[in-house]
Length: 413
Image (cartoon, rainbow, N blue to C red; front, side, top):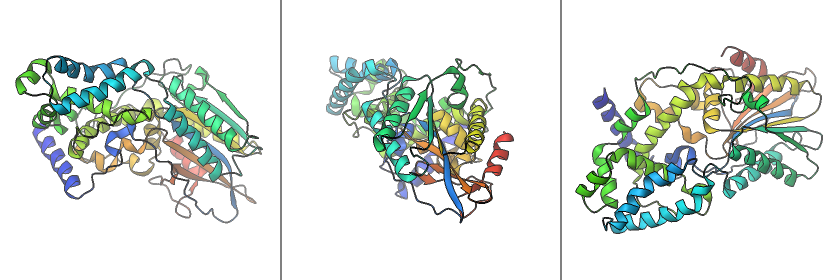
């Protein structure tokens, strides 16, 4: 199994590289990818329909690494190697850059960075500009977040951004354990917290097995020999080369989150980034899909809130700020775009299901349209500013869906 999987993964990786499809836009940094702020794609509504409500879920903006170990684990062997005179010139340079970054950042671990604040502030302007008739002074605008500092600060930044776009707007923002069902139901502080059973992998895999299959021993050795002068030193000081290189990949992936981090784009090749991405992408598949039942309350609460909002008789905007795993899970449960597809083979996962679709400050919306005469409701789903298809549901005018159809899908979960 492992040898076959390794061969298939290497063939997929080689095909992407050979076809020139390996992107240089941060995709292989996965959920650490930076949001690129496209304006919302304009879509013509069917005749007689106008937007009346928005239901929004965003992951937090760019953040610092969430643990002290994320900084220290990859840095300590480099610091030891520097003291021992065992680093190559590139190793010396990488060590210096990562040390600067770690010392600036470690005490901020888990926090929203200034760049993350700016991302949410800017996203608020984009939403206002796209739907001014809904995000209006007449609207009831509410916001909630998980208990994470980075999510609370993302909510604050977005709220300030809306008020900057139009000072007449008023946002009621709150964080409460009674609202965790709609932002992070797996938090044990949730008053409705219910343990769920994680599903088995369809491929008899785990993150560690995927890392072992995607990253060859020779690839890990090649990376380490760019940093350290000889193999003997590496063997004595780094007992698990693949795991160590994975920790370097994780730290380097998040460098852009601070906005002032030194670039370390000269250590990994694109092929190597893709290999590590395969492992982390599978990890998010485990957390968001195999353990996805615990996220179902988000969609159920979003649907309940929307029914109340549509009955309110005035424009409504409901904002939620949570986490990448939550966003990936609800997109999968809704069968939104490729994120609803589980391929037959593990090596095909990055050809369909990709965690880079939820970058820092990535967001999803239902925009509700009501018919002026009949009162019928259609929904236009957006992912990161672009309409996203809901697999298996009939689309109207290519992008709109019956609200009843969406409610039926959620009720069937």
